Length: 112
Image 1 (cartoon, rainbow, N blue to C red):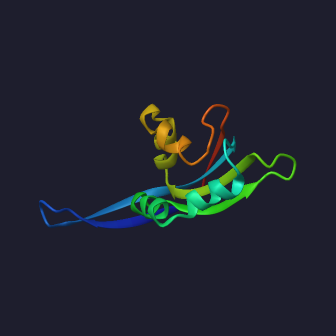
Image 2 (image 1 turned 90 degrees about the horizontal axis):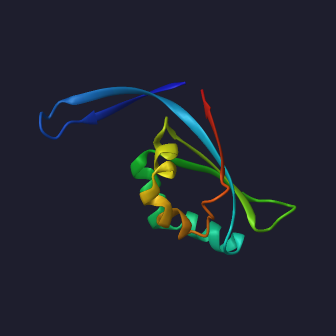
Image 3 (image 1 turned 135 degrees about the vertical axis):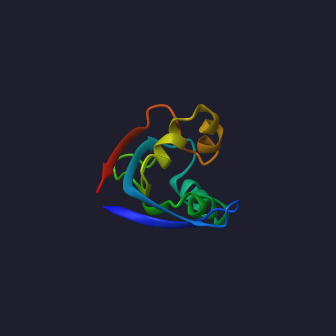
């Protein structure tokens, strides 16, 4: 599925039309804190504002029935945005500040 975004260029003051695919990104990972602490961090206003600026929505945050220190999150946003952020080594401390253990994270990506 393609979405069309209308942005105003600040220099030229013209509107730019951009078409892009929407990607659904699923992360499965271990936690270094409780699921409730992680969920609270992810739902905090500051975190949600950051996602909104990137055009990303958090669709689901859940914990494993078998392991309370294992979680999954489903995001949806412009293609490659979350993947590129997650793969950038400079963002590792930001990701881990939530309780998300970076190592061993399983990432699956879907496009419509």
